[in-house]
Image (cartoon, rainbow, N blue to C red):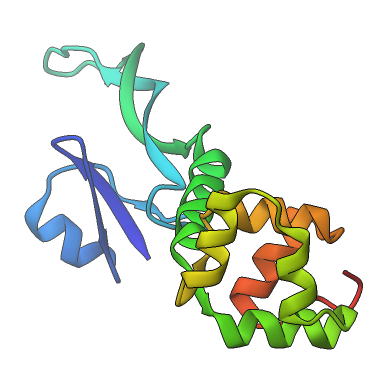
Length: 168
C-alpha cells in the first residue's frame, strides 16, 4: 500500500498511480504494521539538491537545501490509547446472572447463596440481587471479584469468554 500526505491528511491507495493522479506530493510505502491511529503526521528535515541557475554552455551545478516534509511517525500515545479503548469496550460488556453464577460454580464451586452471604453493604446487595445483567464496568464486580481472589485480568477474561481462565 502507498500513502501520501496532503492538507494534513493521510491518503492511502493500492498503488502509486492512484495517488499521483490526484495529489502532487511525495508518495511513500505504508509501514507493514500500519493501523489507523498508530501513525500520525510528523515532520522530517531532508537535504535536497537544488539546481543553480546556469548560463548557456555551463555545466549544471547544484547546492544543498534543507526542507521540512510531512511524514508518518509512530504515535507516542498509541499504546495508551489502545489500552483506554479496550478498557472502555470491556466496561460495556455484560453477562447475565446465570452466566456469572455458572462460571463461579464451575471455577470454585460457589453457589449464588454463598456469594450473596459475602455481600454486607445494603446498596451492593440490592445491585447484586436485582440486576438482570452484570456489567464489567460496575465497581461492584471488582469488589466481589477481589473478595473471591480474582484479579482484574481474570474478571476481564470472564466477561470476554463467559468463563474464568483455568489458572484463576
